[in-house]
Amino acid sequence: MWHIKNKTIAIFAIATILFSFIEPKEAVYSLTVTVNNLRNENGVIQFALYNKNGSIPDENYSNYCKLLKGEIVNHSSKIIFENIPKGKYAVNVLHDENRSGKIEKGFILPIEGIGFSNFETIGFANRPNFLKASFDVNENKYVKVKMIYF
Image 1 (cartoon, rainbow, N blue to C red):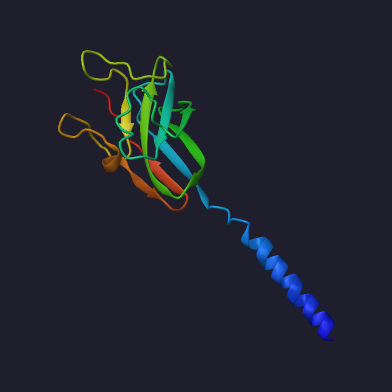
Image 2 (cartoon, rainbow, N blue to C red):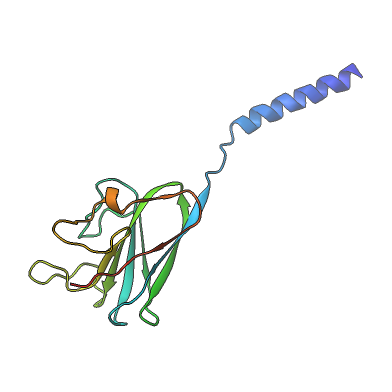
């Protein structure tokens, strides 16, 4: 009986040591982003996801962590970012009417629609940045972004 008990303890000890080397899988979530009331159905909607302070503004789209493009249906578009780890994120949306992948500007202001999470308007006194546009992801989340046309 003592021999079986020692084997059981040894097996338990080995299993505990082996499992201690396995890191628990980090929880991931989905982030659904929608835009409505687009002025037309030309082009695509470009959804850029950011996860670092200082990453917005990003006129050249070089600071994002994920980028997806959504088709326009009935003047709206929706995408889902999958496998998002817990953290702070911000979203920038571009109505890329000519499919260039960049913000087209007139004299100073964009001539295509843009939008940011947590922003209803954009102006010289209300410029987007990561801290203002960010939100927490710690569960599956739904974000609606207002498209702004100048």
